[in-house]
Image (tube, helix red, strand yellow):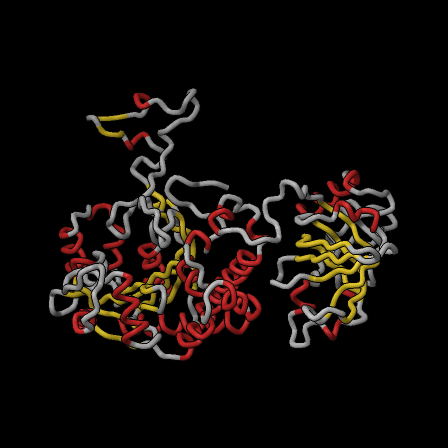
Amino acid sequence: MAAAAAACRLLRLAPRRLRSPRHSLFPTPLALSSGWRRYCAAAPPVAAAATPTGDAVGEFRRRIRVAEVKGGEDQGAAWVGKELTVRGWVRTCRAQRTVTFVEVNDGSCLSNMQCVLTPETEGYDQIDSINTGASVLVEGVVASSQGGKQKVELKVSKIIVIGESDPTSFPIQKKRASREFLRTVAHLRPRTNTFGAVARVRNALAYATHKFFQDSGFIWVSSPIITASDCEGAGEQFYVTTLLSNSAEGGCLVNSIPSKDGRVDWSQDFFCKPAFLTVSGQLNGETYASALSDIYTFGPTFRAENSNTSRHLAEFWMIEPELAFADLNDDMACASAYLQYVVKYILENCKEDMDFFDTWVEKGIIDRLNNVAEKNSVQMSYSDAIKLLIGSNKKFEFPVKWGLDLQSEHERYITEVAFGGSPVIIRDYPKEIKAFYMRQNDDGKTVAAMDLLVPRVGELIGGSQREERLDYLEARLDESNLNKDSYWWYLDLRRYGSVPHAGFGLGFERLVQFATGIDNIRDAIPFPRVPGSAEF
């Protein structure tokens, strides 16, 4: 509320944006029964005399958004004759001789509100400032639209230009722009149809994620971003250090970095040891699953992999549930139920955006998602998957051989062709190609790991039953050449009340890609971080 109050003060002090002094940014409020709020919370009633404790804070009021007006089955017909205030950004402005049509979008949905202005409209003298990208406040009465593109429009009684936009330099115009170009203006691309829709579906997926796990009895745990452990054992981590000072002109001098015996002296660093940005919250999640039973983490993770493919980011978000007193079968059941839940949620709650993706991004995406939502996942062993691929007689770019990891082309063939669009879980992978923490199976060659495959993407979820036996885990750390001293606390979980447990990880941006049909993962996150680029 402090920020809102500050915004109010600034707006009162800056009337110079308005073309006419009669156009107040704070017009007479509509009836309080409408429940609409203005820029700030409702002002408190004026007291007869100030009290020592100060005045009461105003009541917060929920705004009516365009999505609430046009999102119903009647597409807004029930609002005809009612007053409405819309705050948003101009998409287009078409001036005719006696009437002007302004399309305003407030970000709540794909649809714009068509606003009809006449010379009698208060504020009509600002018409030259109503350009694409400008922010406006419009008041009027909802009416049935004479055009065929929308059921309702707003007959405007007052318009206020809040923030002007230079039409000669605003980079996003009505014509379509490439996604490559839009990445160069990532601060403005949410105003396009595509990225507004991606943002809303991403939001819905995040909400559905929390709802699924909360309704299933899981507890959300905040895993640390800074860590001294390498969860995957891959070494592709970003260092976190204060040894590199930028105080010197041109940056840190190499000879100013403390060293000992020719190596960096980490004892003089902030944490007194090497520290990294985390690649996973799993190991920390296991500690809380060992006390709270079922938990999940949902936060940012980082990988310093020099990859410029459409499938990789340096910064991404991970969803990582951990189930205590559970085995691989429980893990697969949870992963399948979660995927079906979030897919059904966006199909039911993001219909307008999903129709947009089906029309403009990937034809048939709704049918593909319905397949995943309605068809139960099937499972097969890694060994059987290898036999299936070899027996297909299909020529793959990458070789198919027991002991090699499956590539995206193999995974997509399995789920798209062999199983006709159903989600498929591959289980029991060779232990040499999987992480140290996965439970070794009785055959001594495989681990209780699983990957959930979906059409078009391939692997979407990867998980395993964790190794709960202390001696087996210590042996795996030795085999992987990992320092057991760095994992002393992780090993303690096996010393004190160890239980069978399992979990999985899901890259959230890959889920957004799967749900929207967006080709490049850089378009599934608001501000992509990739090799050579950390803009915005």
